[in-house]
Length: 272
Image 1 (spheres, helix red, strand yellow):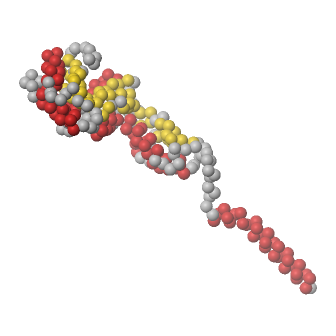
Image 2 (cartoon, one colour):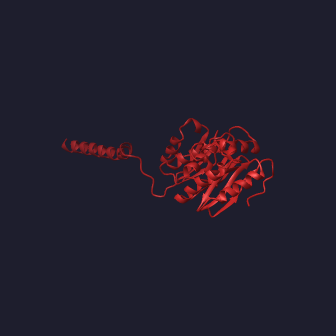
């Protein structure tokens, strides 16, 4: 009787121990956190990962509704389409700040209206002429050239703020597919600032050139770099172009003047 009871108890505890051991993996997996990926592990494209989830969350906005993000080994590839170039640039900025993203490949296409290069360039030039009116736009000589929908910005800006304003203006213009920034910011100098004002007074204050001061777009643009003056824009006649050069060249402290002014209804002769 006693032996039988001992065998029964032994069998009971053996079964209980085996059952407890078998249940350990399930308990530990359910209660503990998911195992972390080893250092240097690759997150496969299409898999749900913290980097992919964070990147997608940052694009959870109406303007990015047609944008897709694919993450592979920390590199985010953006595809799809947006209505403005600004949205394409913003999508890349947002994803760059996502956790685990080391690089961004931006393949987003800019949809929007179809505009010819010539028409788009004319519109962008007009916008730039009136940009920063009242904030010293006379001293910005920013140019734009359009090729296959890409706006190439060049020339000179007086400050970084003026440059950023021009870039933002172009990026938000319908029809622009890409923006290439080649704008140079003139160096900061108190002497150059004084020269700018003196040249502006000498040019716009002259009787035959005073008419250009009436236009907010200020057709005669003045760039000063270390005492060297460059004139840009469009004037009505060769006489006005020559007069502007003489007036700028006569300002005390100016080391030299390059006259890039163009005459209306005449072919451009290039910089001289």
